[in-house]
Length: 255
Image 1 (cartoon, rainbow, N blue to C red):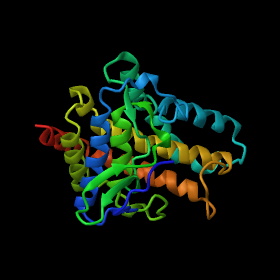
Image 2 (image 1 turned 135 degrees about the vertical axis):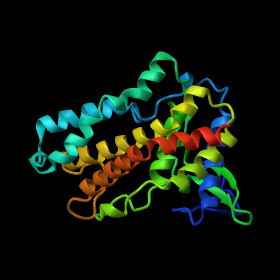
Image 3 (image 1 turned 180 degrees about the vertical axis):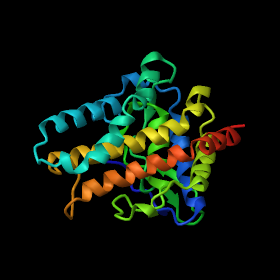
Image 4 (image 1 turned 90 degrees about the vertical axis):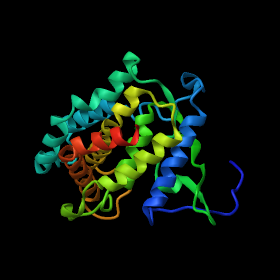
């Protein structure tokens, strides 16, 4: 429980680029304020929550069991996920080797977890702290991009609508790095990988749940988790097309 914060608004989606920028300021400030906190002492409320290699392990185990006999119908999605498996260990490997610092991370950086001042619409504080755990700043940055820079809904059936907005990517990057000047050079360099990894991880989780019979993510129609997996994979594919531009934006915004 925590105190009710008066005079604030909570948005499900950004109404303007400034709203998205303010969410970046909110999460970046959260990260900066906790820079000196000994993250290793924090309890892991959900073990392996953003351990992407472990999410792949769950996918492979589910594929082997194939309890709903759905694997044969989703071979393109399975192949897309497995083709990127090795690359998706990059953040975990960098954390394990000490190239990336272990930090206090929020782990659920949706826009509705930042309260904005109702009058000024400036970021006031971050809420929903039950997923605060040790991790990488790339988790928080990446999940924000996955959610806020996407041009379509998470379960959109028409994949032609789903892209990653480079403008929104720039807006969030600008707010995050300005609010959190304590990020290391390696963290800044890997910000695009954070976006790609968190999006891929989410797609793998949706695909795993679809193959397993939709036990984890609530579904309201047949095939909804498969549609969710497909939108995430389309987002990843679009990031790959825009990779050089994403890296250039990070360089420009961190000068």
